[in-house]
Image (cartoon, rainbow, N blue to C red; front, side, top):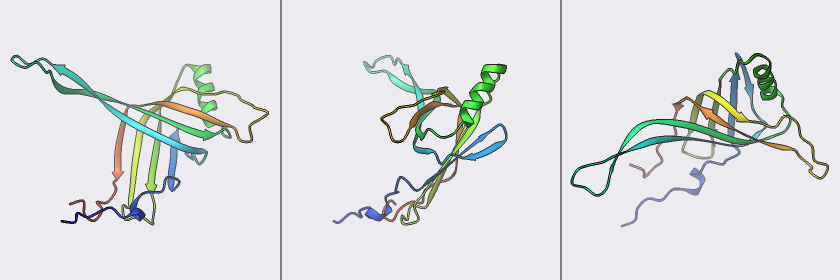
Length: 157
């Protein structure tokens, strides 16, 4: 019996994405980011069960983290951190990521991360030997949603 296989053309090409950040009412296309990843971790609580040697698991909340690599050529986030340093107010922001490869039958997926914060960031940088300066960014988010989801590929159902 031949099971259906995924067509190679249905893989999503990584560079075909868009990323927008909404910060203090301003929306920025973060084209500087050339790598991004977000994760949501479910907190699992051990549940001891009488008569079993193995504990069960019960979900008890969760937390989100994100990280990325960007070209070092924007001051939007440094200005945001400067405001925090000067006022003590750190305003959360949103990150919206859309993956869409029109050559794939998977369609489009959008994830919106809400309540984002940065946990550390480079303020200034140089390197006489590097041709292009990059910076690592990472942080957390409080909530997320998925207003657009990938289509089911042929053979998945």
